[in-house]
Length: 231
Image 1: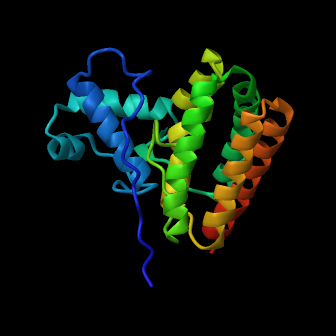
Image 2 (image 1 turned 90 degrees about the vertical axis):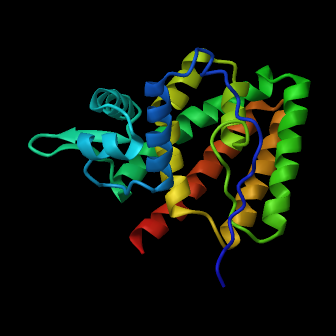
């Protein structure tokens, strides 16, 4: 039976987008979304002329967007080939999740200390919203930004350098693996339970446990995604 996907619609936080949005920004955001969602296939070559036509912008705007996508690790350049979307590989997954486990573990530790009571209450409310998806047996899908459990905890760390390293660095590459490989079956329930335990540790102001549980959760997720890549 086909698995239905529910997209949780809530306003996306604008902490990183306080300046006016330009045409170049819009093109970058759309290209980034299309790559993460798989509209533009992993490993595919990027043609400035084709993208310029598809997105109805100049080649200069497309070139700028590609450069920005390269800086957030969604695009790579190779000699005699040009710009390509990164491929999803077992080796890339291991390297990415080694970094993610360390940095997001630290984010959870800091969030347990630095999140306000209201922010923790909002995090619990978000988890309750996610439960409706999990309870329905649907794919556990979270859009980028404010509706993403991991994004909320990252912001809750209140560490500007850590936020920049994750959000500007590997956040969207991580989402690319998560979105395109998906999460279904028993892993939906176990992932939600892991989220719930992490939030409980943060609510209890237990930084050590929050970090341990986050690192364990990410390790389990890596194992699940690796199995799908190897199928």
